[in-house]
Image 1: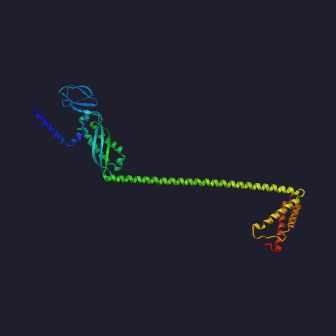
Image 2 (image 1 turned 90 degrees about the vertical axis):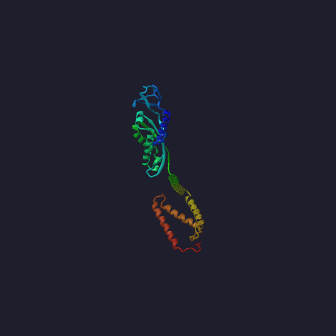
Image 3 (image 1 turned 45 degrees about the vertical axis):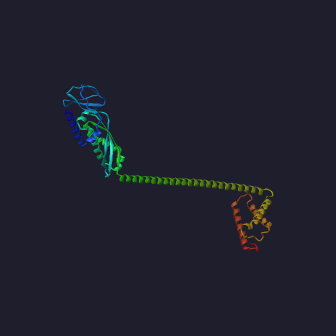
Length: 362
């Protein structure tokens, strides 16, 4: 009969616990600690466990790992707390972001019991309490952020949740070490819009990069053309300078050669038979000039005695002799040049007054 009563009481106890709110969450998040041991006077406490002992219903002490002794009947082991780091899976829940997007989010909570007394007498079912606190804190923190910031500031979101949990769980003797978000599920339409936004952003980046590439190419081409033009102008400048230097040197060389020729001619004329040599030179130049009259132009004006080479040579030698007599030593150069010009002008006036010879124009 006693066994039947105990069985019925156990069934009623299980039914009441199953009907209580939060039982399933507590069952999912319960700690796999050691079952409550019996008082056998001599007890051996395992490492990383704390046994809370009550004496006559009141808290007495916490047994440390190793050998411990208890008083029979009076002492009773009421709680067994594990001091290891525990991992609690936070169930998936819905939360609304700042821009009114409904998210399905879950996470993993890592915690450790620091004070076995507070964990035993500060709160009932500490794991379940911390889990509910993590869920409410998560919803509160997500409501402060927009959808884009939820993905970008995931690390800061985790740290804020841990800080909020620690502020409340300090009275429970529990320390939250870290909180990690596992999955974030968004509605299908929002996911499609996010993918479209990502594709548009990638196309924008590709367009910008392409335009920057074209700009850099155009700048490089312009810089190359600029450098080419500068080098070409410098080369043309150097070429013109070299040409000018060459022409100047050529003119100077021709002037020196002409001066030497004149000096040699003057020396030759002062020698014996110099006049005959001058006459021969004048005759050669006359014949050469007469032979080239009709090569450059179709219209040619000839003097009446153009066929008389002897007369022309004699006239030229007469002019030379008169000039030589006026300035035998090369003095009075300015006066001789003036007289020569006057004689040339008189000869031109005479040639203008004389009638043009018949058959002289071609």
